Amino acid sequence: MSVMPSFEELGLSGPVLRAVTRAGYDEPTQIQAQAIPEALQGKDIVGASQTGTGKTAAFSLPIVCKMGPSTKPQCLVLEPTRELAAQVEDQMNLFSYYKPLNVMLLHGGVGYGHQIEALENKPDVIIATPGRLLDHMEKGNIDLSEVRFLVLDEVDRMLDMGFLPDVKRIIDQCPKERQTLFFSATMPGAIQTLAQWALNEPISVEVGGRQSPAETVTHAFYPVGMDQRDDLILALIQKTGYDSMMIFTRTKKEADTLLVRIKEIEGTKPTALHSDIKQSDRTKALQGFRDGTFNIIVATDIAARGLDISGVTHVINYRVPENPEDYVHRIGRTGRAQQEGDAFTILTADELENAAAVEHFIDQKIERKKLEGFDYAYTALLEENPQPVRKRRPAPKRRR
Ligand code: AMP
Image (cartoon, rainbow, N blue to C red):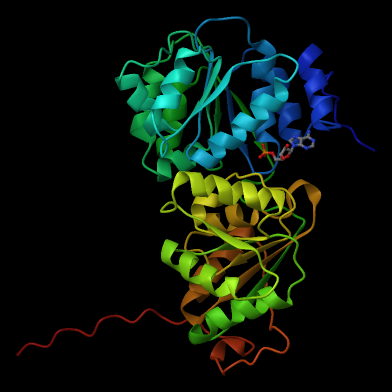
């Protein structure tokens, strides 16, 4: 039996409530139940929440509800990547279906012309990446003097990408009298300092462990010798009954090389997503992956954070991520909204320490599996208890 209050009980009303019904949401998620009533009362919020928990609706619904008529932008949402910004735009449009708002997207990688026109067209909501927004601000194309709602989303990612100084300059140009909603999966010192500066007596909202991946995901490591990494991943793809698969590589070059090899497998419809691919092709790749034109997407971590792609049945890591948090974000692409998902990670001897770090981070031992029928060359990794390979220290220089 559900004990979750209804959207109506959270205080949403009229057109926004109808839009929620139209979106097919039966009941609020936990973060929505916690954040919406507070946000409706005008409180600042600092939220930590796993991806896939309904965070976007948690901040968008109350804002759409509270927006009134204005000739200047009232709401500014900052996102670290173009893809995330586009995703928030979709949701804002969904939630303002019965209360039409002029929502505009502002990010780099595309021309200025259309953006300047759209800015002249009096947007109510601007969803932006920091760099391009600052460009427009410096050119005097944008007036933030009536922003009442400021959303800083995926702040830790913005920190990783070096955007914090830009973000501070943008916040500085927003009115002091405003409501600020702040979301970050982790809270290192620099982010706490930013939150203290940007927020006014915030309410804290935290859903689930910060580091727990979706519980519906089954994890497995596939140990293999280094020279068989590619063959194993290709065999794994062939033998796996997937509907939709995301493969994460560490580098753009790995993604490109792997894409070429996957194309050779019959039945695959692969594409790639990374930052060297031009924006229009990135949009096409993502759109095609969402609508089923592609059933495999090979991506670097740019695609890992927060992207909402439903129905991803499998995530494969080409290498064990060096940063255990990235593992959680990557596998956050599968097992969303209570669906089942599998996360496979190819494991080679040089990555045992990273693997142990991932297991420690998610507080779970990950099963080692062998792919049946694969012609393994011998590697000590396939033994029961392999020892981590110690990084070799350079030999001391000899004096002559
Ligand atoms: P997010 O964490 O904002 O990326 O949302 C993840 C997914 O959950 C998106 O596809 C949302 O449309 C969906 N979603 C958000 N809230 C609800 C809800 N209350 N009921 C069902 N699906 C939801």
